[in-house]
Length: 334
Image 1 (spheres, helix red, strand yellow):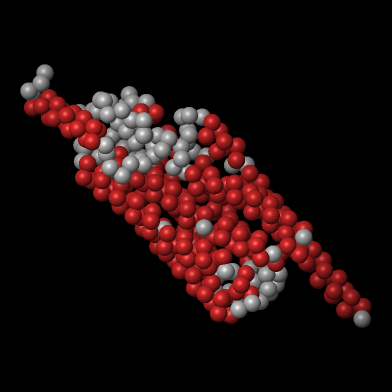
Image 2 (cartoon, rainbow, N blue to C red):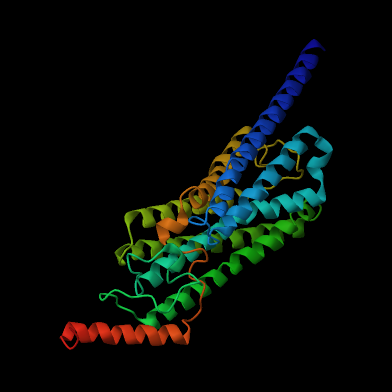
């Protein structure tokens, strides 16, 4: 009898310890994401670092502060751990940000590729960069510019298609994770959830690796520095870590959200793996998009390369500049 009491007492102590540990993890990550809030506020306030290309990282920061605050609250209130609304919201919010940040990388990659064929004059201010909507067509272009409108159009078209391709990962992710709670009551729903989540993560990983290959290829482009390639590959590595973790763990099944059995996602080892290879990697990706001055590093201007095609006046002005540069090289103009 005494042995049974001691065993029950030990189990209670273990449960209390795990709850406190879980609460600690959630508070730590809430603070980590909150620490990035002043960073993006300062970026938005400073006109020299204000940029919308990394908008998904900003949204993720705010959302993760809310998510981990709610998860910390759930740790203190066991009744809320099985809340249908909170479970659905958290599953969707946790599953998708790494995909949206990969889309931010595509936007930066687009700027790198379009700059290959349209490079600004060194004296041009950042607010008048050719990738800015406020660019004036009368700005002087340097003589050694190789302007190829057809290639520029192709790069813009290709990156637009690439961004849309990520919807093939986002849509199944939303559908699968929105029905996550229903899988607890239906085997068929659970199977559908597992398939759609695998589909989402698998497509996302493929696209992330494809974008990484394009980044490596871009290292040979004019004006592309090692910092550009290293920074984008680091972000994509964090995104890939989240995708690989999800693919390697989602085959597990459980009958309860509060189960602590192996494969439930609630054991000490499983939680540690989740926080390191998914949550921490997401935080690092956000930090890499917010802490460095993306606008200054990639010369994006505030809006990035947002156009689908160049305006007619810009095309005419560039054509005139090319003819003048060609004439000067031929000695027709002194």
